[in-house]
Image 1 (tube, one colour):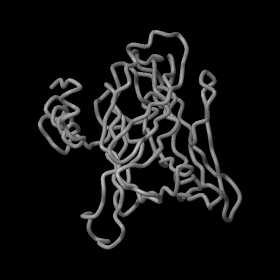
Image 2 (cartoon, rainbow, N blue to C red; image 1 turned 45 degrees about the vertical axis):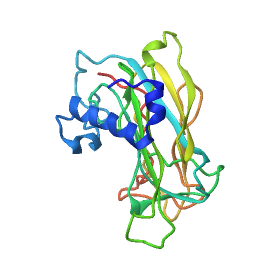
Image 3 (cartoon, one colour; image 1 turned 120 degrees about the horizontal axis):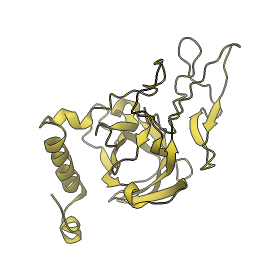
Length: 260
């Protein structure tokens, strides 16, 4: 359903988001409410292990995510914030959620100030393809003051919003980065991402092969065409969490593009 600016001004954010969600379920979710929240099932490196690349595999435009942050507060909210919920991107490869941030109420991230307000991203899980317009979805909440530790009744919506990036309108030949600012009733958020011209997927996995004891770690990566760092892991001087086998538990994968 198309809405003009006057219609949107008369509606509350949760009403606008619910219309968008309902339409997605009807068109892509086969009327299954749960389908809206399902993550993409397409894995990274799906063309890497085969002996021969599929005929359809080719460089294509992709999106690189640099950061998502809470830029300022409104609606009576004050720092620090215990934030949980979802931030995801959908592309036309499978129309499913490619999660950038996903935490439940028992695993909040504490944001202490405007200088410490970057969400700790654990995605995307694969490259974001720029064929049709990708859609960002934000559904974040702030945990209440602790008077009801087992209930979400005193929690507050931080941001409930969605927006698209019109990649089709960009006809340039070079990659570029941009910042998108999003305002809601209770906060303003900033998204930094890049339109990377024909690229192939690059997945980076870090493995500690020797040494023992506690260690701090920071891993970054960048594409030459953009020249901005993508943070894969930053333990901020604290001990870096590790999985069995020596791999950093949250080193993440950097997906700078995707064949096929």
